[in-house]
Length: 423
Image (cartoon, rainbow, N blue to C red; front, side):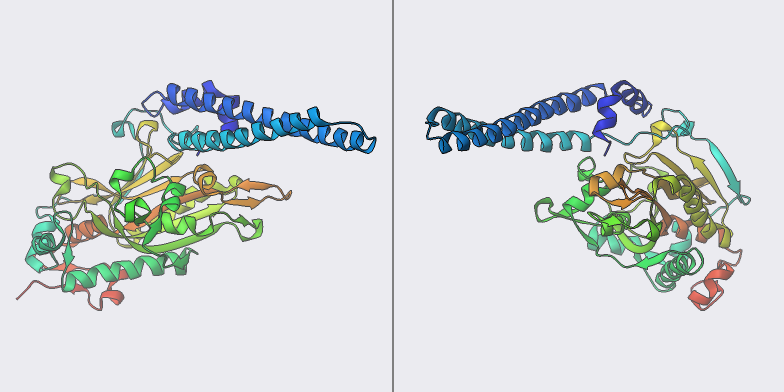
């Protein structure tokens, strides 16, 4: 959520920066400012009446002590009380409305974010490894080796779901354990195992609501939601708290299944397990002071990249332009792994810097070196998402004899170095 003081003091600058996202927010900013003006007028009037009531009440006491009548003054004080009650209700309504308006506004793109209208303007900032050609995609490989079953999963839950089977289920479990061990043992993250069912206010806190409610799986009239990503429960663990500077930065790693209604449009990228309604992911979350957040974004991205380096999977990192940024992000690096079967790079991690956008929504603060309460900066990134990592692994490590050669880091987890063809 944007700072109302920033909008109030620099409305044109805010409109200009938000417009780089590809649409005008002039009307939205005007609505926020109009509501803010009414709210401040009501608060000013309320303060004036409160001061007058105190002054008159004091004067009434003095006059009564002198034996003088105070009927008219008492009536005036009573009228002040009635108006103040109305104003209290009015300011509460305006405060709620102002928050609702602010929740609809996206984050400001950071100054360093490249300008562009859509993904075609995203610059590649680095590459790693040499992409290889492939003739067989993960669906053919998985079917041939009996690694997952899409048709029977559809009988249970419909399209967009998968049932990993046999060696395929073991491979998924091996990847999850590898990711959690890497980030907790080598990268310094604290492992968390959060609830998968999340209250509405927590979804608002990280920015999924109210804008993206149609993409979420909600229950009980929209009071609870299944986790769309571990970012939501993990970041909200410290909501409504004031953190000590000495304990920052906080670094958390968590596995959760992720549930999302939106599974993309029809096309080659939706074939198999690339886009799912339910998928597994290890998420990395950071909470830090404002002056560390840019550095933490770089290290967060490096931590996610290390996964692909250790698995020897070619990838590239792109810097999302202003028109392609997510709603809550001020800057995002996407990591895309090479998929020979698709003949394309697939996003496997988005590492995002949110500034104080999320912490304002969840009232997450820390005391700075001077003892002042500041809103913390939050960051998160997939470390990584399983389906596309799984796809890349199958397609990059498929062997001429039909087996899958497993990269060295997975062999201890999988208890073998190959996945052999079915006999």
